[in-house]
Length: 319
Image (tube, rainbow, N blue to C red; front, side):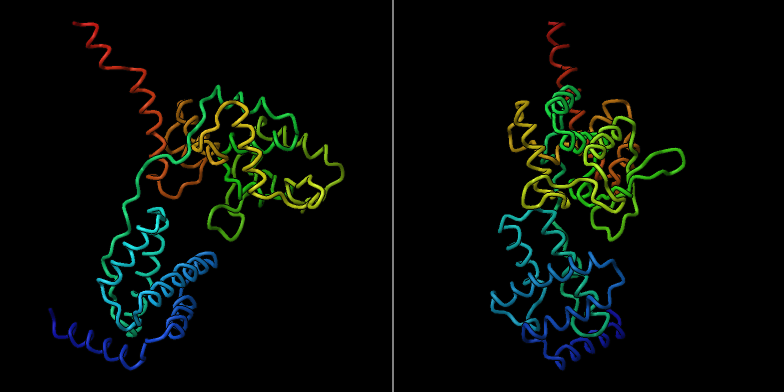
């Protein structure tokens, strides 16, 4: 270890001691300063604030002061999060925020980076929601008689939209890119509508029929609105879409917990692959930043192929 490194670490320790990071008030002050220093979207700053607030609360409940936290305490925090029943993905976001905080604290000579090298939990690559087969998708669409409900479920199952993306859509978001009709969307974790899905004729026509049934509308109106007495004409909620999707799934015999509105997004991805589309096509359609996220959808197809092409049956044909 170099002499310069040791001197640098000593300076950080001295600075940390001088700043007396001992109270929750001081923790919150440093979190505020950390967030202000981040060159990220507002949604990311909000996530940092929520996750670091949770970390601050854990420190208080555990009876520690921030100046007492070392690597063993951060590891214990990680274990406590996992033991609480949170998903690996959620715990990972908490640990990432803590690591970024300590990286910033060390760079500013406030505190040693005691979270350096602490890994996020391994994320299991498995479906939480079950996709529909093409026949099940047809049965689901046949269930809906209401123009709005059919337009929504049809849109989700053909484009892979998330429910929140459908809720955020306005009428004016239907536009063209070249010769393709598209719906501009505000995706997951985004602050603006900087992405889109393509509206094929089968995806667009039910929307057009639904909008025609609403009578006079403004371009800035929500694409899908409520019809209930206490919120008629207001923007539809994700809860309503989820309820309508679940209603249809139950009606066609898919009542397990694995079948929800989010199953429609999985259905889009898997059926792209079933139809001969590439992983890249599925990735672009679902707007996954990481190709590895799309890769998990091959698990369903691999299982289907495994069951349809039984090696065991081939053995039985021989002896």
